[in-house]
Every structure is written in C-alpha cells, then in structure tokens.
Length: 348
Figure 1 (cartoon, rainbow, N blue to C red):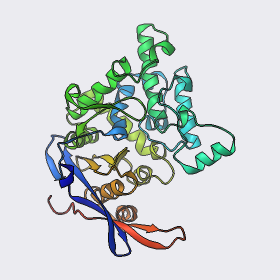
Figure 2: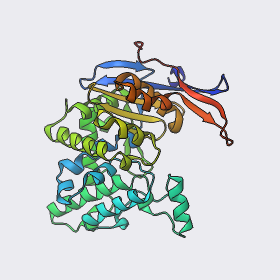
Figure 3: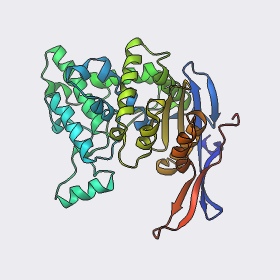
C-alpha cells in the first residue's frame, strides 16, 4: 500500500520538518535485476510524459524521421515536455510543415505556456494559446509525421489518415503502444488504461518494468536491433539539444546540459521520474505518492544521480543545489529547504 511507502523527501521550515513526501523507487538493470528499491515497485503507476522517448521510437524505426528530414533538435522535441518558449513552438511547427501539414492536425489540445515569460509575451501580443503551445506539441508533431508516412505507404490522404491519431486503435497509437510494450515487457492488454492530459492512451506500469525499460534504452540490451538504434539516436539528439526537452531553468535541461549522454532523464506528471544511465547500465523509475513534481521528485532523482552518475567534483557541483534545495520567501530570505532522507549508498 502507498501508505506504507517510506518518506523520501522532507520539507523544512527553519530546522523543523514541516511536510514530507512518501514514494517508491526502482533502480534496475537491463536484465530486470533490482539493484535498489524503496517502497512497492510492482504497483502499477501511470508514467505519463516520462515515457516520451519510448513513444518516439516508432518515429525513427518507421523511417518517418528520415523521410521528412527531421533534425536532431526536432527529434529531441518529439521526446519533450517543453515550456512553449518561442524556439519550442517554432520547432514543432516546422516538423508539421516538413510533413506537409500544420497545427490544425494536432489533437493534443491547447494551454498557456508553462514558461512564465512565454505566457506574458503571448498575452502582451494579444495572442491566445494554440495546440503548438501545448507542452506535448513536439511529441504530437512526431505522431503526425509517423501518420503521414503510414498514409503515404498506403496511398491515403495524410490529412484524412492522421485524423483521430490519439485513439487507441489508430495505426499511429498501435505503433506507439507496441513500442512501449516491447521496451518494458508489460502486456498492455492486461494493464490499467487511462487517457493522458494530451488525449493519448496511458497505461499503468510497475516501476520495476519502467526502470528495466530505461536501462534497456540506455544500453540497447533486451531491445530489438531497430529499437536499440532508435533509442541511441534519440538519446544523442536529446543530449545535444537538452533545451528542447524541457526549457529554461528546468531540471531535465539543467541535468542533461551537464551530463550529456551519461544521463537521459524525463519527468512525468503526478510525481513520476525516469532516467537511463548508460554508463552504469541502469534504469531508474520513481513515483511520489502525492504527485509532487516540482520539488520532491526532482530532489529524489538528483540524490540518485549523485550516487549512480556523478564521478567528479563538477558533477557534484551541478547536483548539489538540486539535492539540498533552499526555499526562499518573497523577500528572498532563506526560510527552509528540501532534503532527501534516503541514502542510495546504503542497500535498501
């Protein structure tokens, strides 16, 4: 039960614990061997946006990425939960244009940019948010590109073919779900299913399987030749364009800007985080019980990276402020902090 999960992160007011966050963590190798675990790692959780790299695999394996001349920055955006900064929006629009379509093809819905400056700029201009501003627009542009290639192969009109691509039985979603099943080893027909924030299907997967999948993404072990090559290509694109995956000041971008291909991490909604550590041959998947993304999940992952990925003083210097976070009030005064209360150096 989640109520029995350990406290992973504490919130301090002064020197006193004011709040705490329980959760579960799996650190697993590509063979599925559990290296470390906290809490119940077999309870299904919805990974949400944490599996966007897996969902982008068919974009590459199908040949769509090459057919439409997608750049590395565009491939990175296909794996992104971006902040809708101008470069993100323009890149998603360009992906669609290269496939011969436009933003009208997107079925992810619209919302204001999560990056505050982008929202302010859009409002000042008198504009309104569109589907390109959705944090998932890059992923969906990738889905549209995949659909356009499938349409071309079947002699169908791409605009008609891609309509409804978010539905579970659409050929695009069948390709995406097949990739998720292949990488994680989970029979999705027996898994809990829901609808994600961007309207595509989302499946409940155990942290054990998610971590195994990310270890496979990082090493290629346990994957088909095509999936291994696609994962390597996407990880390289992300490492060289970490801004596209998240944006200014965001945890994923900050970490991967420093670590490059040594760490490939991706946040998901409701307190999920996953990471591939190719050098260590490991995958990480964690879930905060209360769904906290912005502080607890980041602190927990940063602590794991300190142990499993950091190898020199420069690495530790990047991670230190992400592990021991200072909380400040509106006057800029330090009023408390966040701290992890689990130790990866001690076998769990």
